[in-house]
Length: 592
Ligand SMILES: Cc1ncc(C[n+]2csc(CCOP(=O)(O)OP(=O)(O)O)c2C)c(N)n1
Ligand SMILES: [Mg+2]
Image (tube, rainbow, N blue to C red; front, side, top):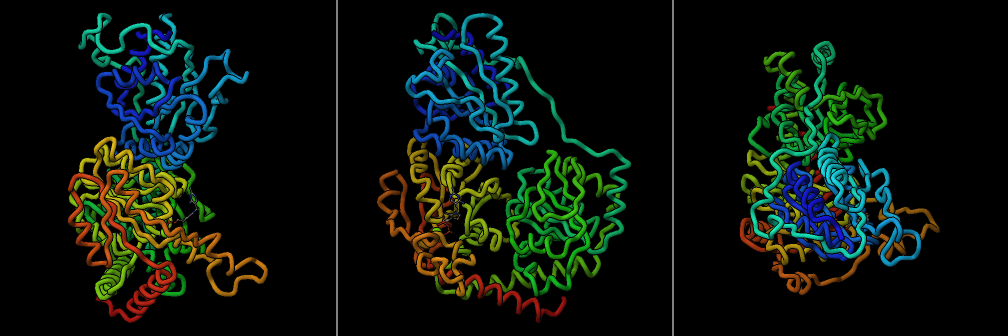
């Protein structure tokens, strides 16, 4: 039997360290912890059935609340199912505390049921691994278990945030030896969360020394053709700080849709949202190549921006307060391992607040306006369904405090192409750590469980099918979300790749096996599935219908799956068409 006092202490310590939410999956070996978490004051437990979906659900919660979320699974393959979410959490720097229940030492590696090797199960993807002892009543066990709980939460949250694994063995019988809720006599109230945590960590934003700041400010001050490339980043302080730096340097900000720069009340006058069009090789960009790029966050979503870095090889400064080395353009680079927002603010002060806006800055803001106008006109005149159209509609419909998620594959690229700049405080997110099409719906629904406003998701059909049981979470826990399902009956992104183009090498199996291997049409009618899982299916015929359905759904309780049907071949034509329209507009634009 597990010592109830130690179980209570472990759960209470997680709460004292700042955890408010746990996602628990059913099982037997995890019984003592499941009961302890459920009984812990200050902890909200949600039970989900599929560990893979549960892992992503917890990831979405942690990403939106900013707090570590606890995950619990029973022993065996259940623990492995957390793998994809653990990998994503590691690469996108999201704090998770993964508790894996296990057999006691004497039942391992000897054919006992539901027993696998869970030692360092997630390999390099977990920031920390430890195994707890059996929960006996020894005071040393209690002190150790407490300190491990605090350390696990602090380690998960410390920059770069990420997942930790705590393996917890239990010997039968699996019931605790005393009450978990309330005092020893079973009455409530005596076991309030610990006033002070047993183990806690204090961490701050790493900043640069003055002489290093002066050096960096000097470099920026000497540069006429500079750009700030703001990549995916969850730091809410960054938009204001980078806007200030842009003003002080005159460097336009190429704002990834996941950077936080496109949406919110900060100064967006130097924010460029159409860089994916502006940076296309052979066009406007060739007369506007940068000499220096300051990059923050993860690598940008846009391929043309990446190509711009690779082709024009500007000087590169990457600022990453978590000490990372994210730079996949293979350029000589200086990594500034200091907090990006704090560094931007300090540089702004050093450079002085005088606004530097020469031709370089004006050229970019003019081009941004020209491209945005050309794209808006093109879309307004389009009378057929288009995969980019959900994003302007969502930017219109979502209120302050909303969270907008985009699935991987084409949705996140169309988000990049079509999410306009808006003063509305909309948080925009995607699982870009490992770019998986798995767990997309689960992540968004986890976000919906803790978001301060409504949650919307744009997802492809293959991704949607990949994570079908995600909708069960909404049914079980009364969650609300607006899901725009872009159904092109297969993987639309592959239509843009070389395997879909004419002139594939003879004998390669193309084009005859294209549909089987890449297009993957499935012909699934999702309407009855959505209905069976408690959602509402809303088919829409075109872009105007879609905008109306979105506006109608946002903020209403329940899950609606708004399905926009598109065609993969036509989608390529439309994307090429709008690119040509923008290129023409840029070539003929008269500077304002
Ligand atoms: C877990 C996982 N499996 C496979 C892939 C490879 N993959 C990338 S895009 C894609 C097709 C996605 O189709 P859909 O979700 O319908 O989006 P669309 O391409 O049509 O926009 C696949 C299979 C991946 N990124 N992640
Ligand atoms: Mg698709």
